[in-house]
Length: 339
Ligand code: DAH
Image (cartoon, rainbow, N blue to C red; front, side, top):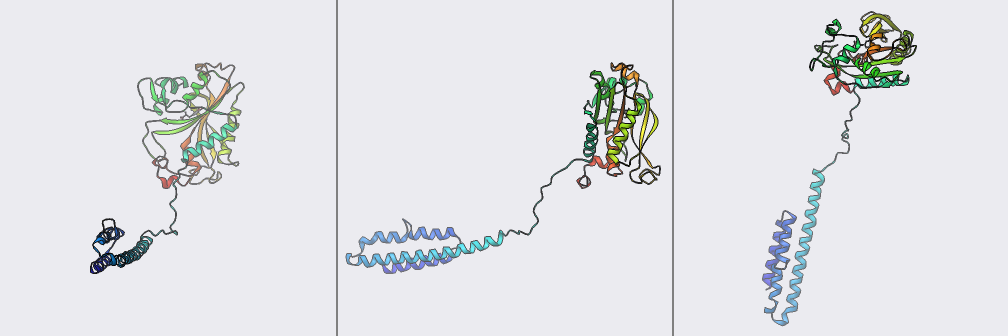
């Protein structure tokens, strides 16, 4: 019996020392100390031991059990320590690494410019109104004094859905739509996307944006138009900005003008930015043509008004000194991030 105990102990210790994982240690525990383990089996055979030897034998079995438990416990502690050290080594967190930044987007230069323009006109009491991008020829051309076969139609060659429906070439149709509603007076701007069958280059795109403006009231004169647009230019480009009204022709306004602002880069002396002229063209405008008023149900004897149209990209390009319109559409984040 004694030899058997001795053997169990030696084998157990050897197995414990050879164990390479907590699972292997547990296997030893089960097979030696468990309910069906070797030592337990030995205790069960106590009945074969002479009664007088039983206490001493019992003691010996218990000592052996205690001894094996102690070796197991030590081995377990040692193993846990090694596992912990390995974990510490492999799961190192470098607290000096820079944190991962959350990439938050921001407004597109077009949007920034548009919000600036809206802010200026809302400050002067204007409403912001939207109109459809797919528009009737009637509103895009006819009601703006551009009848079929008018040469201005060629200039704004566009995408036709069918004979009556076009992708709008300008935001001006929103003028006709607003006047037709019959609510007077009108003070509105209407920003939006427009389309022309233009080739893409540094200053052209088949799809771009305009901001239309319209004021209709009693006793509106060209002086109101000038004052309003001068104020607009100053707010947008700075207090020192001068404005110049050049006679021009638009079918839906009479008289019509194009507006230049003094170059905010050189102050009007002439530079590369303004191509040496000291002036930069920013918009078209005029007094709403009496025939247009009539076609939209407004009595030109009672009401007058002015209108203007600004290219949004043009404002964004000027304001941020971008020299190629294509950059606004390519959505290269490295470019967009700058604004
Ligand atoms: N719609 C014109 C264009 O696309 C711009 C324009 C000029 C709008 C004069 C107006 C205006 O309202 O009065 O070229």
